[in-house]
Amino acid sequence: MNDVEKKVRFILDLHAVGAIKFGQFKLSSGTISPYYLDLRSLAYYPYLLNLTADVFWDILKVLNFDIIVGVPYTGIPIAVAISLKHNQSMVFVRKERKQHGTERLVEGDFHPGQRAVIVDDVVTNGESKLAVIRQFEQEGLEVKDIVYLLDRGQGGSDILKEKGYRCHNIFTIDEIFEILFSYKKVPREVIDGCLAFTKEAREQLLKSN
Image (cartoon, rainbow, N blue to C red; front, side):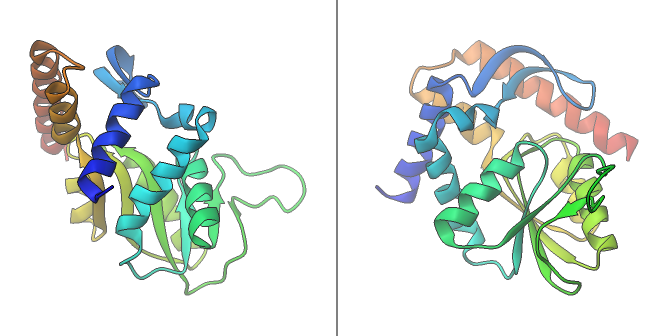
């Protein structure tokens, strides 16, 4: 299976298990979106999690890094899968500091000066990535690269790039929609509505920044 076939199969399988949804969904930003990528369901499908590790590794293998960072919460199982399959060290950051034990925000074995690469499922406005990066930079880690499965095309990548980070997406939302349409999984009118939403959301975010 070549890289193109692998990516097409991956998207079709995600849609088949309901990880790519269409409807009305409230995002963490508060925006109501007509589509949603729900990779939390990967835990129920080990073969898909294994394939996720492979499509991420196609990008990661040419980057310079010491440790992988999974963004909570969906990015953590992705980072674990990559770590196990490709023998890479990983750490993660908690959303809240523990009130017992070591009381650490960053969990894992690392030391200042190491280079960390961020992995996550999607980028929307970039806020969750920046929050994680701030935590790791406070610990003395260097972050240059961010890898995510889907760029929703709403301006988050532009903001991250402006702040000096290199962004690597495996798919754009246009690519995912094109695959689903070409295999007759989603009608054109639904895709057109999603693309119109994406364009408007991007314009609003970039205008506010």
